[in-house]
Image 1 (tube, one colour):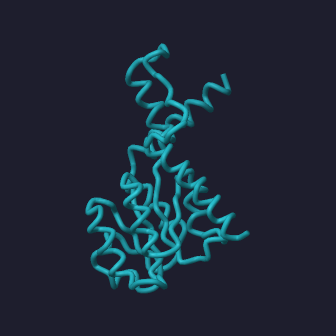
Image 2 (image 1 turned 60 degrees about the vertical axis):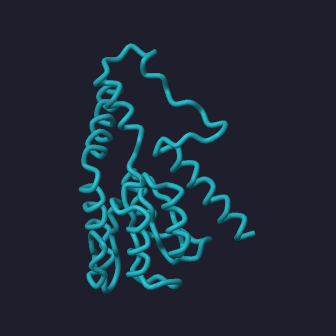
Image 3 (image 1 turned 30 degrees about the horizontal axis):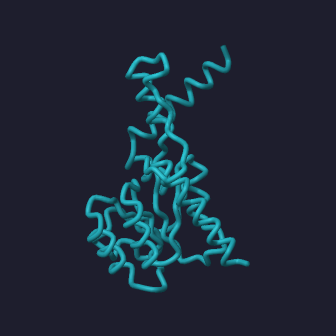
Amino acid sequence: MAAARARGLREREELELSESVGQARVGAAKPPDFAAVQMQPEQANRHLMAMVRPCFLVVDPEHSGSISTRKLVIESAKLNVITAYSGGEAIETLNKFPAVDGVVCNTEMRDMPVYRLVAALKEHNPKVPVILVGPGAGGTPQADYHVDSFDPKRLLELLQELVPAKISAISDYESELRDNESS
């Protein structure tokens, strides 16, 4: 039962991720046709950018039936998350979804040393930023960023610094929606 629930969660995450990074799935709804809507191109681009939220791969050796605290913190900031529960699964997930905006990785991996995981992730996608979180995070120089302890505020600041244009577009769009509701 736990395996079925975990599989269901993973399928939902993959669907949300594929929608967020613009990968088409068979039978998926088509994205809105902005050409048919009476908008200026700049306005249409802003709306489209606001709908595509940044997405991060979180690698956390928690049991697949549990919910990662990092995942919850990142999602609370309105960022999309797909989760891998082992180094091998992280590599496989990055191969399936290479357009993620970054990888947040726990330093205490069980199936492989974290330095090997970072090297493998960089081998598959050299441009993806890798953030190590946890004790000894600075001991892996191949990673792009290091957060020595689980400091949610610092982690969110770092993730937002990685995708400032997307964060700004989302913020502007949400402000515009609030302004339209109040008028």
